[in-house]
Length: 73
Image: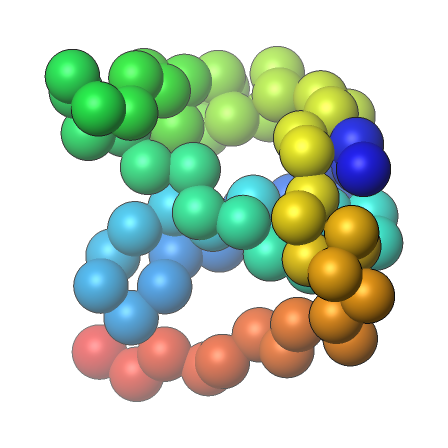
């Protein structure tokens, strides 16, 4: 099920996570050659992806919304 990106945050491993309108989170790592998402590298290009649709497998599974974990550094 496609859901629009509404925001981003980093996880405890410093990887980017997309926040979807459905309340689920999805990693959007840039890890070539396996995952090629150079747009996660800058604030400007992440902002350009707001509203972009990602396939949410958690919606298809009927999972409850994710909860953002507070990361302390």
